[in-house]
Amino acid sequence: MASVVTDIERARDAVARGSWPEAYELLRSLDPSELTGPDLEGLADAAWWMSRRDDSIAARQKAYAAFAASSNDARASFMAVRLCIEHFERREPAVAGGWLMRAQRHLREQPECAEHGFLAVIESTVARFTGDPDRSIERARDATEIGHRVGHRDVIAVGIHAEGLALIASGRVSEGVALLDEAMISVLAGELSPFFTGVVYCDVIEACLQLGDVRRAGEWSDAARAWCETVPPQSPFPGLCRVNRAELAILRGAWSEAEAEASLASEQLRRIDQEDSGAAWYLVGEARRRSGNATGAEEAFAKARDLGFDPQPGWALLRLSQGKVDAAVGALRGALSAELGNPFRRSRLLAAQIDVAIALGDLEAAGEADRELVALAGRFGAASVAATADTGSGALLLAQDDAPGALDRFRRACATWQDLRLPYEAARARALCGRALIAIGDEGAGREELRAARAAFERLGAAADASAIAGHLGERTGIPGGLTEREAEVLRLVAAGRSNRQIATELVISEHTVARHVQNIFAKLAVSSRSAATAFAFEHGLA
Image (tube, rainbow, N blue to C red; front, top):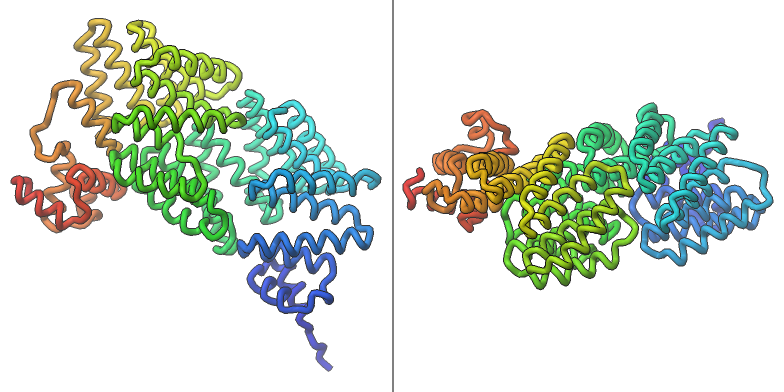
C-alpha cells in the first residue's frame, strides 16, 4: 500500500531542496501549532528568499522561541544572530544589539560549536563598524579557527572574509584583499550555503568597488552574475548584484550601461528596502551627471533622497557645476558630519568639499578638508584614496598659485588613476595637469594635455567636461548645438534612420558607445526623441 505524503513532509522536502517559493506557500498554509523549531526556521528562510522581510523576522522570532523553549541553545543562538543581521540591515541598531546579547547569553555555557563561529563573525562586524578594527580582526580570526576545529565551511569562509574586511578598514589593504580572494575561492568551489554565498559575494565586490579595484571587481562581478541566475528572482541578491554592476560600469566609464543596470535595480529593490533602492537611483544620477545630463541627474538624485539615501557627493558636485555653490556647501557639511565610519566614502566627500570651498574662495576651509584627506590617505593603504588626496591637494595648491607643486600632485594622481583603470578620473587629472602647465608658462605642453583630456572625455561621452575644456582652449568646432564631431556624425546617421546597432557597425564602435553619444546629443539639444533630434539635424544642415 502506497504511503501518503503529508503537507508538512512536502514542505520539509521543499526546504531541503531550496525550493523557496514552494516551501513558503506550503509552510504558511499549515497550522502554526504543527510547526517545530526547524519548520519555523525553514519558513523564515523561505520568506527571506521571497523578500518578505517582515514575515521572515516574525517566523524567525517564533523559531527562536521554539528552540529556546526546548533548551536547544545552539540553534536559539543562531536564530538570534540572524535576527541581529536582519535588524542591522533595517537600520535598527538597538534591536540588533539586543539580539546580539541574547545570542551571546545562549552560548556562554555551551561546548564549542559552529554557532560560536557565527557569533564571532557578527562581533567582528560590529567592531569594524564601531571603529575598532583590532577587535574586529581578532574576532574574525577566532571565527575562522572555530570553523576549522568544528569542520564548518560556512564559518571558515565568512571568518576569512570578515578578517579581510577588517584588515582593509585598518589600512592593511593588500593583506585584506588577499583574504577576500581566498574567501571567494570557497564560493566559486560551491562549498558554501546559498545565503552565505550571497553575503560573501556582495561584501567582496563592494569592497573592491570602494578601493577602485576595477579589474578585481569585474572578475568577481562576472562570477556573481552567473550565481544570481540560480537564485529566486524575488530574492534581494539579484537587485544588490545589479547595484554593484552599475557602480562598476560607472567606474569603467560605461554610463549608459550603468544607468540601465541601476534603473532595474531600483525597481527590484524598492519592494525590499527603500534605502537600497535610493542607492540605485543615486547611481543613475551619477551616470547622468558624468555624461552631462544635468536635468536627468537632478531628477535621479531627488528620487534617491525621497527614498532615504543622501545623494552625496554627486548632488553637491552637480550644484557646483550649476554655480549654486552655497547649496553645495550645505549639502556636503551635512553628509560629512553623518559619515564617520567609511574612509572611502569620506575621502570622496572631502575631495568634493575641497572643490566647493575653492569655488567659494574659502581656501581656509579647503585647506582643512585637504589636511584631513591627506591624513586619511596616510592611514589607509588604498591607491584610490591616495589619488583622491593628490587630486585635492593639487587643486588647493593651484588655487594658492603654487603651480609646480600642483603639477607634481596631478601627475601622480593621473598615473594612479590610469593604473586603476578609472578613465574619467584619469581624464580629470590630465585636464588639471594641463591647467598647471599653462600656469607655470608651458603653454604648448599644457594645451596638449588639455586636448588629450578633451579627447578622453569625448570618448567617454562626458559632454559637459569636454565642452568646458574646449572653452578653456578657445577651440569651438562650429558645429551647431555644441556637438562634437563624433556626435554630429552619429546624429547624421540617426537622421538617416539608422538604429544604434547599424550606427555601431558603420562607425566600427560599440553599441554602448553609440547609446552614450545619442544620450549626449539629446542632452545638448534639449530633446527627448530621435525624431526631434532628426528635425534639429535637418534644420541646421547636419543631415
